Image (cartoon, rainbow, N blue to C red; front, side, top):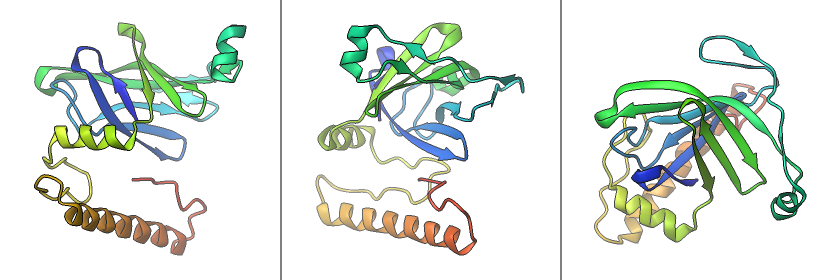
Length: 191
């Protein structure tokens, strides 16, 4: 997913799920919140908890005008309570603040950092844009993320293919382990 982070420009995130918790990690980052760090989380359960431990009921959906409903193909936009991370340059003075995840059809969503009135809209990038952003971000190792990407010179397709193949093998092994362990949802951890 790609969204415009204000003056930092467009950044790519990876969305994962664990139970009812949606977590968005930065694939490309900036001076404030670098790549590999969590940019926001949202609780998708009917009763969600804030970081302070308060229980909140579902947020009421946003009701669209008739013209907006025609454009987006729906009359309401579901919302979920969440927390967004912010920081100063160098990932210092990092903090979490209340936010909301807003689902906009099947192809878009947004996250709003409520105390600072900042909202970012996300959409799926084209394969070309995704590759361009990943190349520009470099291949520095990201802490806590499985297999580090290989150092690839220019467009070494065979090295890229080998790396993707290793990633798919790791994912398949993880799914097989969960099935063997008897977990009911083998795809609860997408990485």
